Image 1 (cartoon, rainbow, N blue to C red):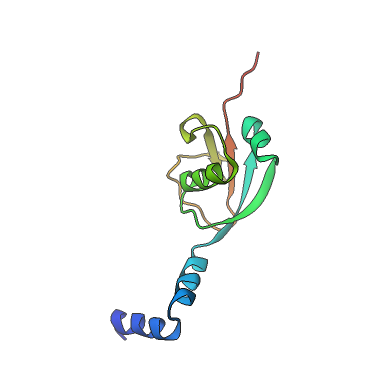
Image 2: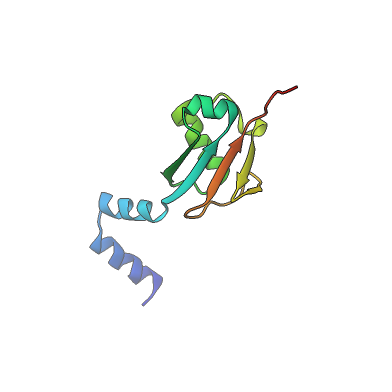
Length: 107
């Protein structure tokens, strides 16, 4: 079977919005997100499990920033992925643990 014929079969079996919903669901993943300091205050939670289609930790932060009105730009926040500091371009996978750590003033 060629790629074109496989694609045609998929289109015939799942036309319209149903096909898009199926493709969209396949990109969805559940991740745990932990918030600290200002982000914890702005979200009103310390931790939550969320379902997202974001591919990277940056996309996830931007999604949450729009949804909850986070005031900090990603460039001023540190991010950890699965208990290790990470680059904002890191790819998200099912069951990942993401921690957003804003700057903290102290003395």
